Length: 99
Image 1 (cartoon, helix red, strand yellow):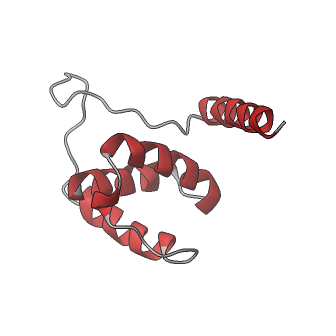
Image 2: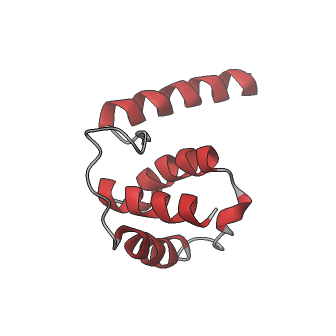
């Protein structure tokens, strides 16, 4: 019974994330359509991470999770913390850049 609940919950979460465009994807660095990197994005990500994550729980060391795990965590926490898409991308860049 519990397993079925988690399967349904996971399916619903994926549907919600895909429907709202929350899922974060990574483009190859050499892709032609990749916009120029914003030099302040890393700093904004660090500040948002420090201000937002510390409100509810202890902040994790960026090296605690792999880059792909951070992508999933940020997608989940974007919804929970009410982050904008840009804030979520900034935090993800900071965490993956610090990893």
